[in-house]
Length: 381
Image (cartoon, rainbow, N blue to C red):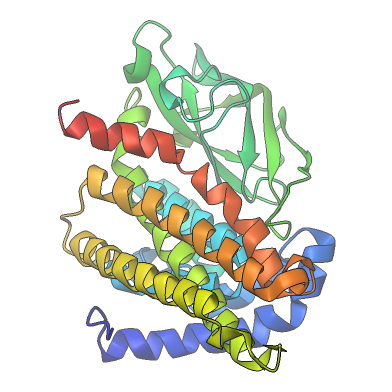
């Protein structure tokens, strides 16, 4: 089905992103997998192309584009190539940067955003803790007043971009008596005394992303590192999570569509018992079901993108898009592996890597179970 979401400017931007992917990412895929990191020169190339500054105002080094559809195009094109790069770039530009744009003081914006847009300072966001998971309101990291300073202690885990981040927006408890209303956000800079990073975590998939733990031991900062009003951190996270979840849905679905396209071609080329395997009725029906499921899901995700571009996306609709797109992606890729047979289980085939990389999408940005809980609550259940 023809998509009607994007105009000529979006498609021209898509071509620029696609050329970047083919030039900067595709030739170095094996290197990134081997080193478990996206090299900094690739980040800087993406910054020079303007891909990280879409939401950042022009006076702070960005493009100042108030149209989420451009963000979605970037997520789609990078997601088509690899879930890991899409995750890393998304955390940097689409998830963490908006916190600084919307909550930062003018001095903070001038200090950090030009380098963020240029890709010379990499962002991470520290929400998840070892004992907390999806329960953000129960986080245990603290920031305690000591004269004119805050003293931060605690840790975060499963942090995308964690190992090479230059700046980390972290959620900590500033008032233990106020529950969710006692959480604040701080921006910590790599190299601060007491701020250390763990080794790159050994993950099942998305090995190109440098996921790690972050540790805070008596990290001292002043109010110029407090992001937004004290005690408003949880509320601000709830405001920003719908965009994170929609971005996940966009990239996940783009990845599934691409691998499905490649699989359909494989079933046309691969022969067994004297005929292309795609002509066998079971395989034909399986492919027909997948194509339908992907296109129907795309229609809903596109509606969510349009709603978000108009400032009308609800947290509940974002939750629907997030969990359903992750479910569809995993289901489709599992069938694509099956259609490839033994080759589908070989890491040299993109379908195997995509299948392995996709599994985490049911877990992060709020587990699929949490998404269903949000939807159920909205129904009065």
